[in-house]
Length: 129
Image 1 (cartoon, rainbow, N blue to C red):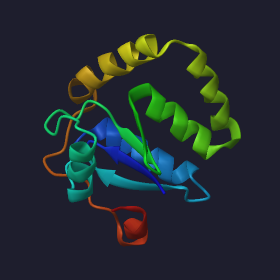
Image 2 (image 1 turned 90 degrees about the vertical axis):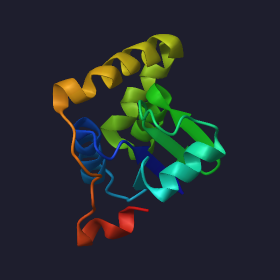
Image 3 (image 1 turned 180 degrees about the vertical axis):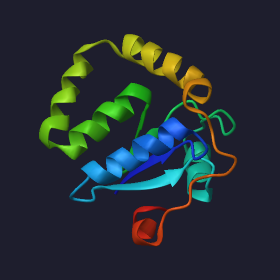
Image 4 (image 1 turned 30 degrees about the vertical axis):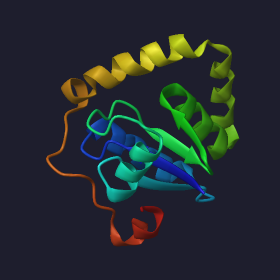
């Protein structure tokens, strides 16, 4: 199973989840907010901070991907034209993650935040943990 964990109060992150749901025609991805019970459990399991949600995370089986690695692996899973983004793996991770972290630090300022985590619509309930 491939699970994308995201900051449930971040407007940018919620927009990314909406985009992924629309692009994931084969429904390869499930979703959970980092603030959920499933999110808290994965953060504990991998000894990650449970108060700073700077990264979205992809859990692919037992393998955990973070930051730019998670984004590129998700693009690869989507296939089609999105698979082409995987070429950015050629850029050293420290550079990719520096850009990712800069955007993550400013995401609330640029895109805003919600007071509560996203709740899936009834038709999307099966895609969320």
